[in-house]
Image: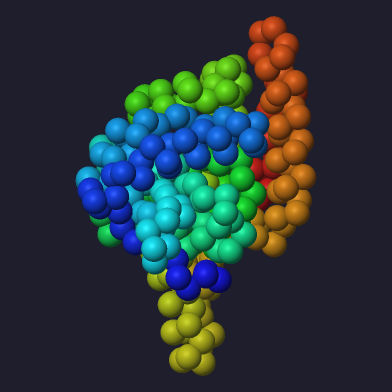
Length: 260
């Protein structure tokens, strides 16, 4: 983060007076982007602060800079890092990345076995998530907790989501799976051990430690960005038609996610 005078830390009950400012900026930012966001009340943000499930960024003088909070779903099998927002006066200086890193760390501490996911339309957030180890996934890999999806009702794109039977929307789903990450780390360690021993791995061992095919999200981000623009065009066009439509785009969507 460029500005060293900004403090990024876990929020506490003493930060509750920032709640109204935070929720007002969430709503204003969503309107400016024209994408919509699940609305949260100041009381809800205050609760997250009291529970120790939020991260706040402030200047040394106490000016509010940014915020994000944690939500657990599906009996704590899934965790979402939600409501990321940065004061417009401090954008473009790495604040969002610092907050995301801190909230990710806090999520891993509180819910070490949970899958961490997010829904976003922001390409900058997608890049940050990718650096943290998230991968783009289909909506079927997210929580099926009804309470989570109810939160989308206040979003301006809710009709799009429901017209797709909650299988797609303008947001991109990204997921961090700790079990998969542990497997990848174990495979990498085994490959390093074999290389250090300078012995060719038997065919069976080589097959066992062969890394799975990765989604090449980082290396093909420009292509992903073009896909996002296409996805937005198709979904909004389909939403304007009676009956939902959009069937022809489903095959292309499956092809894209299979390629990533």
